[in-house]
Length: 279
Image 1 (spheres, one colour):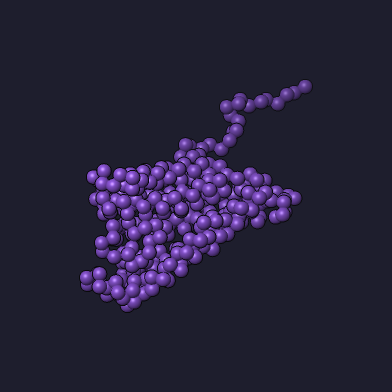
Image 2 (cartoon, one colour):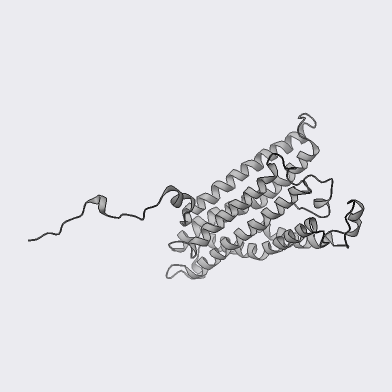
């Protein structure tokens, strides 16, 4: 009886060939992307931890450390708050846990748009790097306007980082929101379209309901912050008057503003800020 020859094991393609870069850096696997989000979020969280030590040192022992100036203290408060609220908690809880759990708990093979999922992480990483530009030697340092970035203080001369510091913060926020939007739309599409057979919405795990609702809140809330970041950038760079009141011209030599509304920024910011508590 004739028998078919079995090819050598080395000749059998057991998996798609991947280099280290394509497997771990440009991976479209939702589990790898979840780990990438987690590592990046924890890394930037460690920066926030160091900033909190600076704040507590100054509060507990005022003047004991010479290099903790008022400017550095304000910058530390601002960067710590922004990192913790947005770049750590949102990215870690939704970006890391969401990417890892959503396909597994839905019975899906992966996210509906794996390539978009990969791009969303790299855009998030870019936003973190832009945020850290304020600490590059030779720069004036990050903004010290407080994590709420209220105008007109945020862009007036005298506030730490009123030039490049606030611009890097606003640019970083805009890039982060782009990353969140790509990831959020991917989550919603996967939850609605990629559930396993027999899993209706009412049979979904509560964890997926929580991730889905948080994503919907983010998709509704973050555009308000995106718009306010663009408008404040225009106020700072082009001299527009979306948020800058006429009284601010008394503090800015050579700058004239037509009378914007700082309250408008507060409305836009807290349209984002209050849902962010639940995200």
